Image (cartoon, one colour):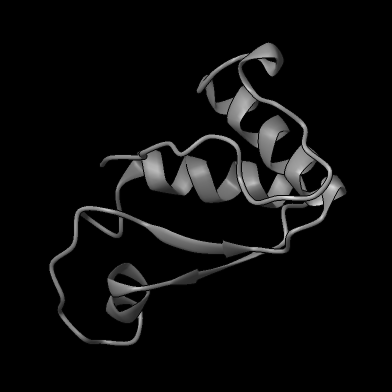
Length: 87
């Protein structure tokens, strides 16, 4: 996965514009710190609040990853749907 891929820039931009609170972790994050580690996925930790989940869903909708009815709002547990962003 190319860290300079346009789809990834669009993904991060949508997260920022939607005020999603997250940190990037895992192999992909290490590449930003100069460690050349091949990975095909993007690992993130999200602030687990209902408000932040709603922000994440809005960013997915902006990106065309689904419509609001594709996602469930849940009050007490972790993410409802796992998706993949490939570059």
